[in-house]
Image (cartoon, rainbow, N blue to C red):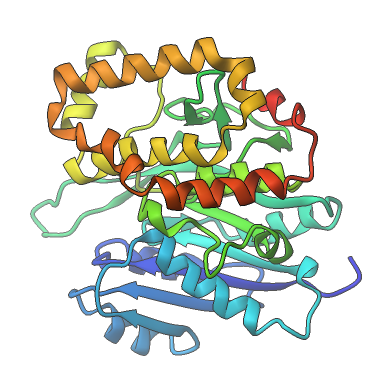
Length: 351
């Protein structure tokens, strides 16, 4: 790499003081400390600004008056970083997106940066993301965080029916994902992006699609980057931990899955269903649709009738894509016109 890498690490916070200090502690132990820390708060009421001012005075802190969502808040940080790198080669600048409920191992940033040196056409990186759990408060009145060996994500996968999931989610980490390799995408819980790649898929003031608000915007971004020829890499030695708050594909019996769905936050479930429609309208090309239509149609009919019969409160999620359809279609036209890879190239990820 011809230039020394520049790193901007971004955290979006929202009433997360129960977990945010653990993230801050893990950042202080990083073997690579040459990064700019940018914290975007979405109108929290838990005193996080005072904490940051006192404990992390080097951080750039932006406070929004209300919760703008994961996507819009991260767009603020990405724009800030790119604008301050105007005199630099963006291909050697990296933006590390981090959830407030994550914990880094000491060499996490170092491992990802090492992989960037030999993969100039890769636009996104992720590591071995394991799960963290909070034990119930004991007599002392505090909770202990358990760093487990249960896998949360080793990259994003896609099926022929356009179902997307975190690879290895729920499995015990026994070294089955020990090899570095290309993947479809990276979980937005912790993902590092090449600034040049993000600049390539920019739409007006957006990098992540702000219409998504939260959930599945990482899949949308991964799909768009792949279409522009920017690959994704899984780096197993970069280990981090995540307090998982949303259901993901795991090896569970069907009634256990149903119980998990019932236990999800209603707003999270609604966003997940709605944003899936946004994904398909924007990103599913005609060739991809015709090649995978039996699986896509079968899955969408199954999804629709499941919600209709068992979760009718969420039916609005199927209407919302049509409400903003003109805006989604404008984004789709730009995505489809600006592709750099052959139309058949993306089909390899939909297995």
